[in-house]
View: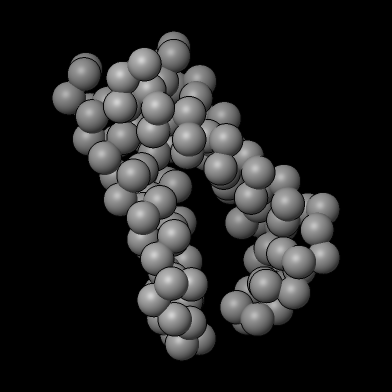
Length: 115
């Protein structure tokens, strides 16, 4: 398994998990209240799920879809990082969002180079 394949798999599973949890868990509900984004919780969850499916389907069948999905997930995580900074979360609390942004930016660039 290549590094790119591993990262796509990791990102897909992560975003499916977090996207679904936006719809099902009280923990995510309280987190979105803390972020000041309770009205956007379902939208963000849906975008995470769509991004995960687009990333995996695009990686296997349609690279342009994978590129667009990876860019979308990366942008979503950059915005998430900004929210974390705005609410004054610690570096440890904020780090996952920027790490996911970097992973998905790498995926987008690697898929673009493979065209």
